[in-house]
Amino acid sequence: MFDFDHLPDRSNTGSLKWDRYREHDVLPMWVADMDFVSAPEIVAALRARAEHGVFGYTIPYEDAVRETLRYLERRHGVAAQADWLVWMPGLVPALNLICRAFGESGDAVMTCTPVYPPFLSAPIFQDRKRIAVPLRLDGARWSFDWDAMESAVTETTRLFILCHPHNPVGRVWRREELERLLEFCERRQLILVSDEIHCDLILDDVPWTATLALGERAAQRVITLHAPSKTYNLPGLACAYAVIPDAGLRTTFRRAARGIITEINAFGYTGCAAAYRHGEPWRQAVLAYLRENRDFLYSFVKERMPAIRMQPMEATYLAWLDVRALNLEHPHRFFEEAGVGLSSGVDFGAPGFLRLNFGCPRARLLTALERMARALDS
Ligand SMILES: Cc1ncc(COP(=O)(O)O)c(C=O)c1O
Image (cartoon, rainbow, N blue to C red; front, side, top):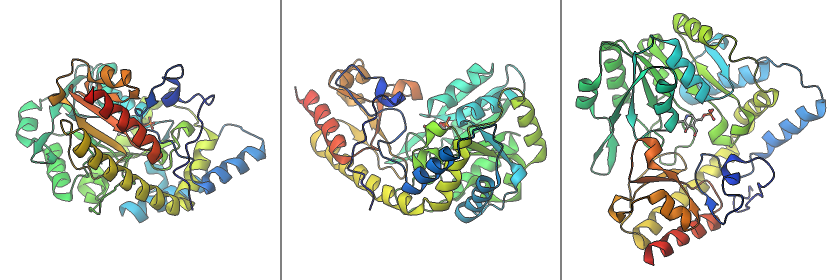
């Protein structure tokens, strides 16, 4: 029904992902967007909006708000109210504003590595200290290192930023882990920021618990960050939102955003409403395709590049490859020279690792993997 084997030509569209290697024979497998055309209903809604022809300042309009509230209820069991939503042109600005809004210069922000690079840069950009606690690998499963977190937290730590599911290790945190994290944040009086942008890209049949679904205690200290952009491949529409049930936290956050975040893109709301309203068949289809890509990748790595380790991943289209055993001085550069553009683990706080984006047609994935394997063979 949807043709995920088709590779769209993204040249001359200002693609961040593709233009990095415009003049080079390097396959872009880095930044987190997918080489798939979005759901037809989303494309149709955007076309209809464009045909209206008037593109004035746009406020969060009824359709987008209604569909988002329904989505939060249906998917997360969270009965949110419209005024809990703070619309943003992206979650990176939201992460930065949160670091700036709470606490003071020199206070600290905790997160767990390896992690999406803006989690590491936002505290520094906003004049905060960064406390990065490595996740632990227990067998084949990444988990929180509770003892290390207890030792690292300080009196001036104000925030914990959680990635749920976790980019790049692909873990979906379980209810027990979230409850323990909430208890940790309560005891240390931290605001818990839960970035759930990848939550609709869960590949395995594992239970999903939204952090806000932990109930009233969570509502007092959790800020959830969401966007339809990863799931439906819409990041260029610049539409994301924070869900902040607590009025005090919300006011502080909104104040920090004053004069910096103004009206967001009219097409963003249109895309968001259409995604939540009509996107489910496309989402299920893309999940099935991504699941096969992941399994294919996993087998390929195991058979053809056994020195690379890849732990089982439950979510996202971003694979986390441990290439330490290859003993390469610059692993990222090595594969780039072999014609594959990956994300460097250094940026995630984990040298010796690479992240591979498999949100692309399978043939393309195969070409990239063959290039990698050939480079290692020679
Ligand atoms: C965990 C996480 N948060 C946020 C973002 C980006 O958010 P935005 O494009 O809304 O700034 C990404 C993109 O890859 C991500 O992986």
